[in-house]
Image (cartoon, rainbow, N blue to C red; front, side, top):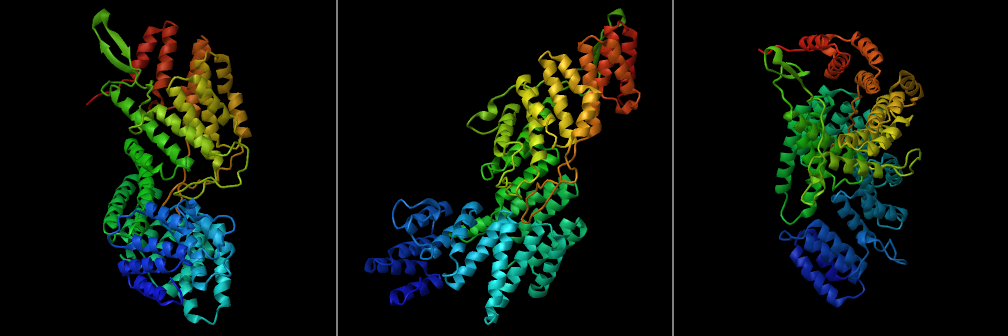
Length: 616
């Protein structure tokens, strides 16, 4: 809104003073008298109509209007992409405003495309606009967890600011901002020494502001000093000159701290408080300013954190409800689909467990009926869960936790990963967290879950393929490869291929798997999203549990092949290494089965009596 003509200057003054109705009237009068600036006038008119207090235009509708009017015709290109021959320099302000709207809508990829286009022609642009483009581009890169790209723009800004050393006011204004960017950049790159140095610069320039203390808290978090991190959060100011709502960030970061300390229920509590504060911040936003609402609204990021914590806290149904709401916003993240599937699987397991009899005296004995010579022992098979097929999760009224829906989510997650063995040039999206780097573990986890789901749905043909893939994946963790062999053997048993199943469970095969595994256990997977980049490790599976299950399954295969003597020897060897409290109910049932098949009824009854529990 600059120009030498008086009507243009009047409209600019009205806009700067917040008199948007008067500015709209001036712009309409200017549009009738001038045809040279028609596209710019329409652009400014759209902005004024959006900023009015009584505006009911949401941000998506405003973006559509902005791009249409910026293009100068009704069918403008979405995202503000110029037609061939149009000059980016002339449309710099229009493209910047469009990118700013995308940033407020948290659509960082589209904002980055427009800003990178402007960054290529940044030299001819006005200095104020050039600074705004660079600062917004750094924000987008950091929000999208692309610190390498952000470092390039920060270096450009550093050299450009120093070259304009005559303007001391401008240098002081940008110095604190640059230190904040560098601190966030080094934190994402996990360069703790450089991060510590920049935090000292931030504190010396800005003092103990909310931004500086929250960055220092994040630094202590990355170092594993959780107590000091929580003290810094408690000592930070409760207000901030920016539009961020401090209570929302406070409870969110406290929830992340407790999650990292494995205090999942406390993490759930703080995340619920963060959701409440976020709702208050959205309601308290000024009317008619949808951009402010989008700036303070972190609903989906917090909801993702909340869902992950609920899953770890043993509340899979609530986790399922949270995560299914976030998948629409972060549909390109394969890890979200995996977490939804895990929530559905655990919900189904919980429901099946509720149907089992909990009051029996033994995990092996369901009940004893009759008396005298008619007394009979009924064995408990409740631990052998048979899941029901369900297509309810695929209906239009909304997803429901079922194994069928879990299979759909796991297939979505696999589709989002690059083909096995190929190095992808573009990083796999992990929003609202950092891009996913440890693809081997993620792929193995998805394949193991998928095989488990198909076995639960009694479809061994579908279960066999993912089990074979993860079993042959030498770059996967050992625990997942062993699970792959376990599920592959179970699928082969259901397909009446017991000899092949036995070869999968043989000690020689297991030793070959251990020797051929090339996975580096020091790798860490980035999983968690907060207002600042946070990390959490995926808990390792217990190799002892997998080894025990492999032994029991090999005994079951020997029983199916009627090699009872060998099965009894293997089982006896396994039981000799365990205490009574460590013996799995499946092992007891296998031993009872073998004794019964060999005609040793009294021995079977003695085993069952030893496993009985006394009720008080």
